[in-house]
Image (cartoon, rainbow, N blue to C red):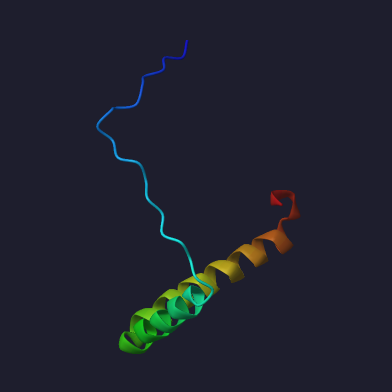
Length: 67
């Protein structure tokens, strides 16, 4: 049996901002700025993601039954 509750009347609707074509470039610029300000953290996260991709690739090649 599934019960359904009505949403609270006090909740506010979500307001989304319109995106501009230049926004992704701004995000990349800010990301690059963050990378330059904390290169050790950036290298650590990059190495972690590379290691996970390498490990998953090896598992899928070595044990294709997991695919």
